Amino acid sequence: MPGAAAGTPSSKTFPITVKKTATKIVETPSERKVPFKGTVNSTSATLLWNSPTGWQPLAGKTMGSNSFGAFVQRTTDAGGNALFPATQPLWSNSSIAVGWHSDDLFLADAQASVDIMVVQPAAFRSLTATRSGAATVEVRGSMGFEGN
Image (tube, rainbow, N blue to C red; front, side):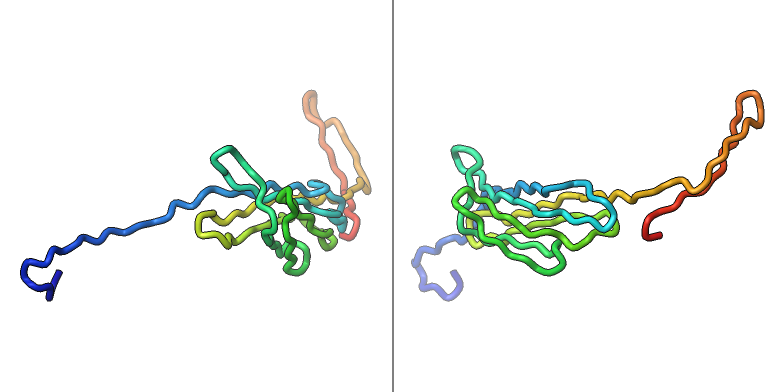
């Protein structure tokens, strides 16, 4: 060590890092396919950590999501479960994301996302099919979509 008195033993320094234990969120929306302007009525999420005996729930932890029109937080119960509210009306495909920022030095953060498909009602306004050759059919028409 610089500045140490002669004959004083020196020690080496080495970095120590913490390997964080894996966590995961299992996310289950009440619906994965909704009609145009429909809502997902609720989304449940379970927060788990990979313990030495397998995946175990994390109770009393706060998960959050901004997929519901505003930032929403829920605290997990004894089983690691939390229930999020309905989404706003959906006009196009969307995803619902839930995350947990670890408050424990030894546990990693977790996040999950589920895609939601919005089904657009449609109807034919007109349709004609004409044979234009031995193996060819010509189809013409138009479709209408609710809400344009």
